[in-house]
Length: 397
Image (cartoon, rainbow, N blue to C red; front, side, top):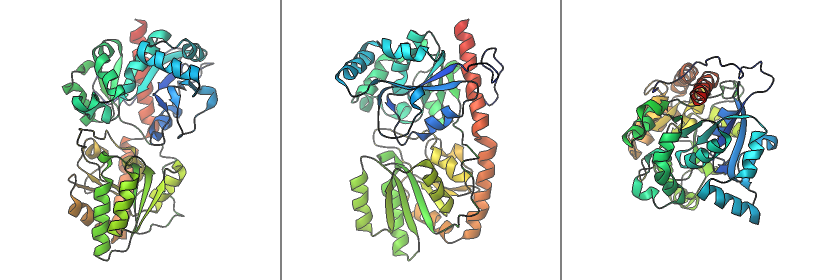
């Protein structure tokens, strides 16, 4: 079961012609943070299943369809109590009743730390559980995990979750190997990569490439933004004409803005942007930088969606040899890889794209072809729905 599923199997009662699609309950504690566009994109691309969103609480971020979105805690005193009861005892009768109206067929929990809560929902709904691990949830070391409530929750209930869950998705082979090393059974760990909507993320002939470097992501240690700023400072000192556009936000924002000012980097911080605006910046850029590193606590990427989105719009990438990143590009063909924290190498590879429009064009075209062949959302979602249907069949048996 370690293969990367890419074809859907027929399953009576859940084909497109059915009068009502069975529901896939998409669970994560916080619905839905601005950096989690990949969750909604995948869910809304489902064909044979209807995505219904469930969470412990709502957060400012990504808009979700209200008629298919349910949370325990709506910031009322009763909601606080309901969330606490659910997190400790798995008791959420109101949420379960709301979800049953949609004829749920499976609970798909995103992030391993949401797996225990997903397990409680799956039990109450009498449906199978699937858990996707995206990065930090599989890579943070045990000592650091014990410092957080969610980390302790996962460690405490890991063995039970392994017994109960129908399967665990790893979004890259790097994450799969980490799960296997951590004791997750090989027969339940599935390699299934995220996909990209190639119709949405497409090159735009009306957008002219400019000497722009784009970064998209959260401002946390593993994203390596500080090293990107240092590389940009070297380019500035060398007289290279460019602009650095940093899209996102997070706990290191003040620190990074201070560093950019000290380094005199020609830089703009945009905050989180709507996905269409992110796409426009990627289309305009000569290169997208993904300088990810392994954080001090072990936190690592899975396979950054930004990597795929950039290549899909025919913009090459400069990224680090980190976690699943080498699985999502072709080094020297769709972009360039450098070692983690290699500021000199990062600056040199960025400069090579900023000063060579022909290289940008040829590698950009190769990137689009690579993503279309390996990460087409339609193909990947068909594979995901095949996993759903297989887990349902096993659950019924």
